[in-house]
Length: 72
Image 1 (cartoon, rainbow, N blue to C red):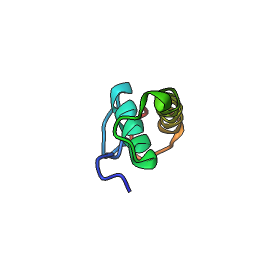
Image 2 (cartoon, helix red, strand yellow):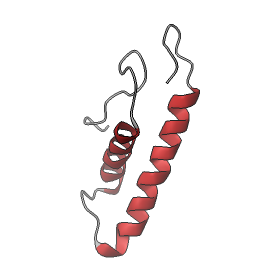
Image 3 (cartoon, rainbow, N blue to C red):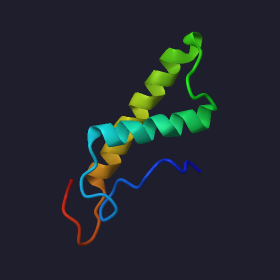
Image 4 (cartoon, rainbow, N blue to C red):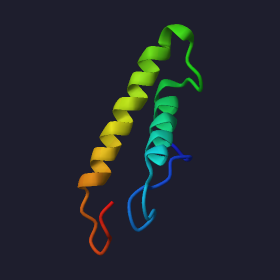
């Protein structure tokens, strides 16, 4: 789906930073919306989606249980 989004969970990534999570969220919103940079009238919706997806991603990574991996 989104080739530029890399896996952020262990063992593929030792520690995903907030910047990593936000970058993945931004790539996802760009792909789904079809906009690399939204028009001014869509900017607020675009930014909100990025923040909500980044938050959900952080929650997911914090609560995943990966066998044999250290916690985030």
